[in-house]
Image (cartoon, rainbow, N blue to C red):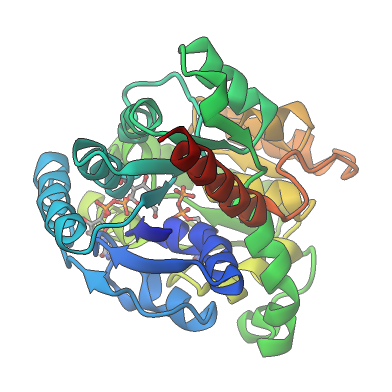
Length: 365
Ligand code: UD1
Ligand code: UDP
């Protein structure tokens, strides 16, 4: 069996890393196809280095662009590669334009598609990610749902049960595999002059937030109120998209907020783990805060990770006045919630199920 692992952005590299390691361990023939959706050193290369991942065999270097343009370039590029280096299975992870292009290119060539992190739904079609994940799910042959809840969403949409496997989320595998390595490699708290549980950590990059002057302004003023009330600084490693928009809108960084460059994964895991509270609009960061037992306030109007809210690890604040209210509530919460995303064996279950499915398909033939 030959597997093509298609990825292109920061979270895909991180969440695919346990699957790449598992393929290596099991001697599965695989290659990595990088679309180049992310390309800056601290959004791309650093993760290959820190996670000791093999080089991508192909990199399409598509870079940034409008949705149609970016996705179309990927689609054409991926098709070319799949035609000349044809795998039995293509794996995509998550909900980015890379996922849509990868799943679509493979599906049109009748190559089996496995969607890792299938079945997430925000039910908000204004998010580009919702369109990507819905389409990817419906054209996939193997759907690796992180929870029973995500499996149920897929069943509700008529996807046959035999295609769905509940595996947990590889975000847990990645965190567990790298926490100890992170501690051994350095101490980001010391580097940034921070004390454990005496700061907040924040990220924001969702298009619907940072491309809107009102919503990005709302987030920054939420940070300002938080600093005023709790006197703890907010460490904000900002995505390049966010930095660009802060400049474009001419926003000042409020007192108490420390805007820094994006961190490597090993450093970011430490920053998250040491924080008193996390404020974010990131999908992966909502999950990681839940895993690391750090309360989270989500800077969005909805989430496709409702499990984090259900277990009491997360509150949905939006980008306005509710930020401070939710921060107050989460700071008082007990930290004894269960991690709903599995034990860290999602990658193993994923590859095992692909092998089983491949075997049963071959027998049918
Ligand atoms: C993309 C995904 C989003 C995911 C995020 C992870 C889509 C539609 N969006 O959003 O779901 O949560 O990645 O971080 O697929 N930029 C750089 N360097 C880079 C990459 C981007 O400077 O390496 C800047 C460019 O100005 C670019 C902007 O960030 O225009 C947005 O990049 P893009 O990949 O289009 O979307 P993300 O916001 O990163
Ligand atoms: N992350 C990182 N450095 C940072 C911010 C985030 O390594 O400065 C990691 C984080 O640990 C998580 C992933 O990036 O695993 C989340 O990616 P992002 O927020 O860009 O995308 P999303 O999860 O929302 O798709």
